[in-house]
Length: 54
Image (tube, rainbow, N blue to C red; front, side, top):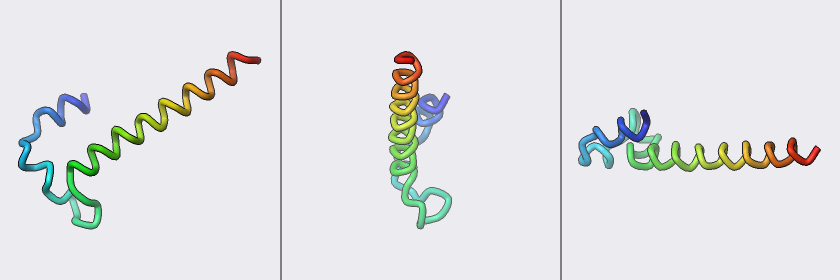
């Protein structure tokens, strides 16, 4: 769903301020969501390995 929404965005919007200039641009926030998702995926993977070792 997230990827579909990003795909629908007009490309010119990506460099616009995200809700407030202090939060950076839409592009930066989209990248942050992706990076944060990878972080959580890594944490889930580590927890799974720990659980499977027991």
